[in-house]
Length: 224
Image (cartoon, rainbow, N blue to C red; front, top):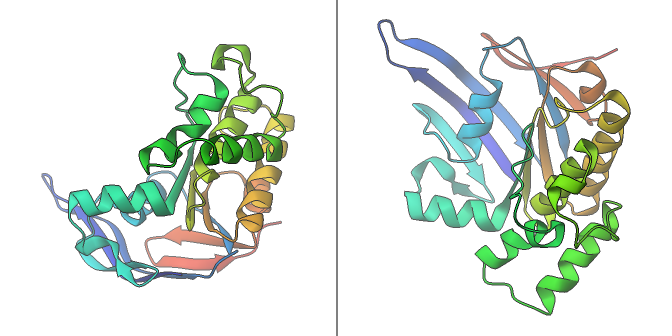
């Protein structure tokens, strides 16, 4: 479903700096991988390239056969809205919208209206354990609950690919464990492919495979 080949990215400056080089990765529906590596090695850059938020200098990124790097801005926006879900360390919920309205935003962006939208939002809130919080405002929720809202929002439109960048960085250990368990369960239940970028070995251990990003590329690793 996702096929990355010989991906490379460099940034110009006083000296040209290569961030990624020769990156290969294949994911099938239901695959859930963690990417680890030292700070500044390019983990977030990798996610940005996969999401089409940045352009590679070399290689290809194919999602369901479509090379993301060849799409124009409008096509990329449409692809992100329909086929990708994002979960980040910052929750990015809109404070003036209710929980249900926040979760339903991706549906409105692709033209899905009530009653289908209401049913999907209700099902996702049930799945993340927030069925009774739909009318609440974000300020009334804990950090762990807000991250669960972010997961529900990322998955409500049935994305093919879920990208998570340090999603538990702002959470206490108990909340983080619950969020990681939920994220894995939902990626599997929706038959999405998932990439989790993390510094945490405990977080990485929840994935099917752990990959280490270094200057030599992306390599499979064991986490103990």
